[in-house]
Length: 193
Ligand SMILES: [Fe+2]
Ligand SMILES: [Fe+2]
Image 1: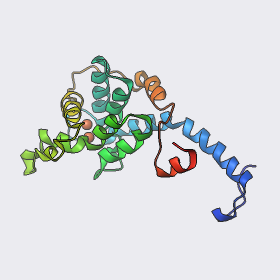
Image 2: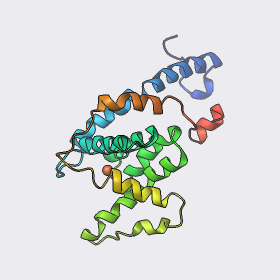
Image 3: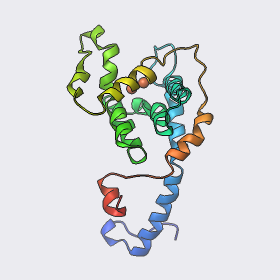
Image 4: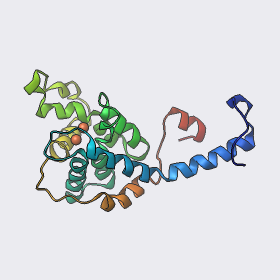
């Protein structure tokens, strides 16, 4: 089979869906390469800073690596701004959605909220509330998000810093993305996790 015959999903056969599932599995295996390609496009995202967004996330991931953080945190640092290309109004949520199947609750929550925690460092200069993150002050991952932004985000714009390359992080990315721990509601309904 090269293609299914149906033009409405309700007419598909078990054999056709088995065929599509196999192709989907192959597609999923290529996810690390697709993420690398997306990170490479951050080279052209958000100009005006001393370094590109790609160099920013490489610096964040390198700092996390040097500090001995877990591989989940290193990849969280590497991917935290991957949404800057396509989700300028919700970049934190986009990164968190990509990471969600592969990281624990804390890493997911911190990436999802890093944008609002990051506001502490700049929002007051343009009339915003730098303490907007205080709405989460009783959350168990509040301190973790404060730390992530302080150690692996707001300080990662130094053009003199010597970051590791994307190639260096690729094997770590492949390991973290190797086994989805859980997907969204559709995935859970189909596969049980
Ligand atoms: Fe960000
Ligand atoms: Fe960032």
